[in-house]
Length: 171
Image (cartoon, rainbow, N blue to C red):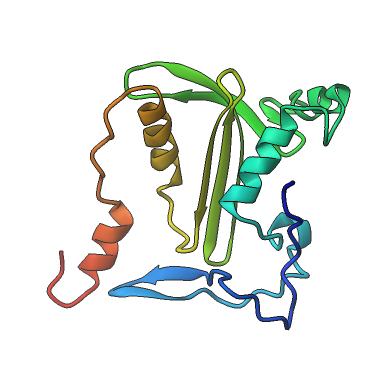
């Protein structure tokens, strides 16, 4: 049974809830406050990787949605966009292309990506609380590892270089 997740309450203190941060020269600071009634379903839900995994597994059954609704949900209505999901291919380092279904998101201090590979039932879920733009490289690297490729060498982000250049002493 996967747990119910909620819209972020305004006053309740939730143990172990992540805080959002944004990068600044020399480190991070708290992301600006955003009243969660503004984004509503576009960013105020919270969950865990474990619950998103269980939700993904349930989508391979007809327990949550009947097959016809899932087919409709994943049928593109605008280019490769299908009712909140982007359908496409993810290219691995060896040139292999995987058919993927994904949903990305971001809000003050947080970035998320959920990538499904229906053919193999692989799932990559990344939840980040530093508003960084490295998610796509991580997804590709993780999928590569799942397909027997060596882990890619981490690359230094241009954001890190630019932030470091603003600090005394520079890069």
